[in-house]
Length: 449
Image 1 (cartoon, rainbow, N blue to C red):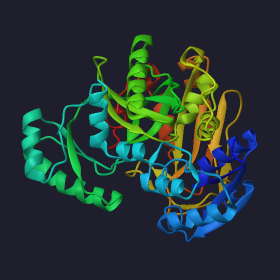
Image 2 (image 1 turned 135 degrees about the horizontal axis):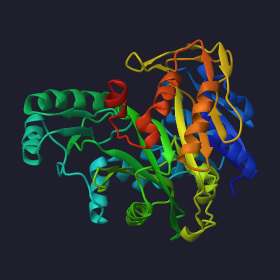
Image 3 (image 1 turned 135 degrees about the vertical axis):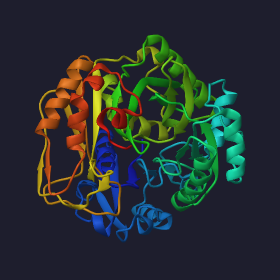
Image 4 (image 1 turned 120 degrees about the vertical axis):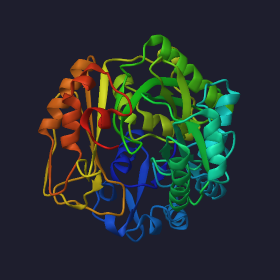
């Protein structure tokens, strides 16, 4: 096991990693920007080093500063969390060249997964169904229109280096596609430094379901069931749950086996997620694979009693998985609500400011992952996630009741949050029945997502 790990992240995930390290007996080094000097992860880590100004470009994304902090602190490994540099193959390669273990997949695997077209080809090679689409990137809008005419509208444009819903546009005809292509390419270039775009058939009335996997790189790999992620806005998840109300035992086995085929095919090591789209007929299609710990990992932890962050660190330290597929047991149902500093009734506009009141829910079956406290100042520099509220129950109905009660108890004042939206979703009859898809917000609540 490692002696000391640097955490190249902030917020609730930095705290989550610090807690896992303490339970493993590993010392931690926090890095922080000037805007985060009063953040809890700075106080709770064994050491803390400032790596730059408030902007993420000047701090959490500045690789030389992070590597310098790691060398000064004499750490053996870096945990990137999620977001920022978590899936940056170049960063992982630099870590290795400096004899620092990157807690995640190898650089070549990260590079392959970061290219959506290469990941799609890997899935095809593993015999996993993929969404019909372009065989390569599209050089211009004319090529996009020609491809769309072959596969049929509606279609979705996607950035090859995409993530977080950026560089994605839907189109229903030639005219809208030409305009959407230019917008998607410009957004992708600004967000990822690459304007490469490809196209897929837009499947409608679909669910977004993902499989959690663990692989130790020594021949052992398991899946930990699925998470339902269909409640979304702007192609970004708002609520997750495990298990999915749309997945039965047969489909779970098929999805799990497909995910394991893919990670074996690419030589994956670590914690990861294989994402699928599920149509109303129960057919599934590979969407993408994420080579990191996911924001929504707590719901899997709640139903399996497996600490994913501890497992991730153990794998990076060279340990073999301590269990096999037959040992994985599922118990109960878990839901997660992402509490963001956004105005859901006004296009999910970010709401920076000072948190005046912060009252947490509690009681049986409730878990809170957060870095916020009364008086905390939310800046516009980072992601708007304030907290993750997780509820567990013996079955889905019980978990929904626990979540509903917890949301009523949760109080944040001083900034606008998504709490009122979550209350509306959790009470909606279609959600309670488990009858929803990725268009839920627009179809059921009239919110453009």
